[in-house]
Length: 184
Image 1 (cartoon, one colour):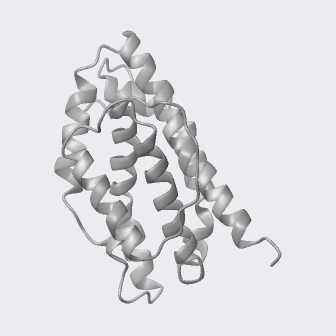
Image 2: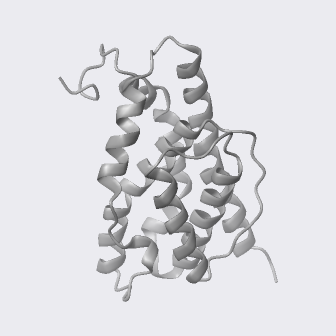
């Protein structure tokens, strides 16, 4: 049975998804400006990604689990090469699995964004949008989440820190957009 399909499931993946649904939705809303005009807002979007992923890595209590570490490092390298701006964001320590859940989960949505960018005429696409081995990485994160007892202190920490990881993307979006609309 798929844990995401069964609300009564004891699989921590489902518990985490349900517990962070509002944070996920509000993060998507904080980035909705990119969906409305990808061409005009592409530099800001890339800056949000670089700022949030950098803050996320800087906040880790321990390294991200592999292969998530390689994937996020590769994304940051691409964003730096694209010239994406990096704003400082301070964050408290985050559980690496919570950070991986948010970071790699965000990558799964990149396929949709890649199509929207192509439809908007962005060519060539920045390397950030190019396909990667996101699915095996996501499966690895899901397997680790499924091994957690939903009633454990670790589960509570992963839920709390997943909310904080989503917050990093919302804070980055607010700071980048505020800077973009500040009078010169």
